[in-house]
Length: 221
Ligand SMILES: Nc1ncnc2c1ncn2[C@@H]1O[C@H](COP(=O)(O)OP(=O)(O)OP(=O)(O)O)[C@@H](O)[C@H]1O
Ligand SMILES: [Mg+2]
Image 1 (spheres, helix red, strand yellow):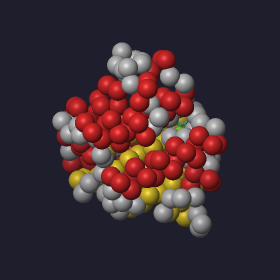
Image 2 (tube, helix red, strand yellow; image 1 turned 90 degrees about the horizontal axis):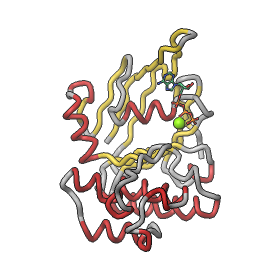
Image 3 (spheres, rainbow, N blue to C red; image 1 turned 180 degrees about the horizontal axis):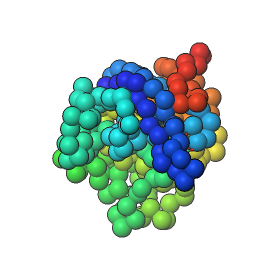
Image 4 (cartoon, helix red, strand yellow; image 1 turned 90 degrees about the vertical axis):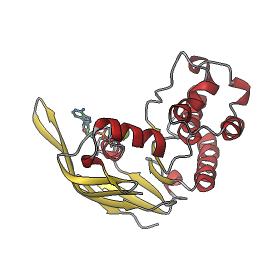
């Protein structure tokens, strides 16, 4: 579903180039779940952005759903994202002028692959049904986070990229949301690449990798 081959990425900074990823390779099969860990600032979000085709590597190649990202133009990458990917960012990027229900359905509608019953079910299972006609600013941080997860899953993605999807929740709510996320991922058959600082969150994933000094290391369970 996702492959990175020898991917490197650096950013230009006033102090000179900052090398963040130094030859990162990984493969994620359909239906597989992977936790990505590592210290703050080590490049986890950078890796997710590259995997989503939102940024381009300096060298190396990335395949998403068997298509090489560098062989596509921006419009093609954007269409691939819309149809195949669920994205949960550290900042939720909810649309303030749309209701909870319309936010949840937005990507699925744009991709013309909304399954109305599934959207309703997601709202219920994420505990958002009674807020369906509210606006994001009327939600708590944890509710916004659940809505961001719902929006990503409404499209029934082939791959879900989630950046600290339970970062704003207390431990009990985080466990609940994570359990639900795993359930939904299994139901949709989606692959999952999840960034987390929490070993508790990483525990139920099939594999766990740590990004350290620009390289990936396997963490044994
Ligand atoms: N657009 C940018 N320009 C310059 N430097 C950047 C840019 N984006 C990120 N960085 C730097 O690259 C490094 C990796 O950032 P990244 O956001 O990928 O880290 P992270 O592992 O996701 O951290 P966190 O756990 O805090 O979210 C950091 O040192 C950051 O300051
Ligand atoms: Mg980050």
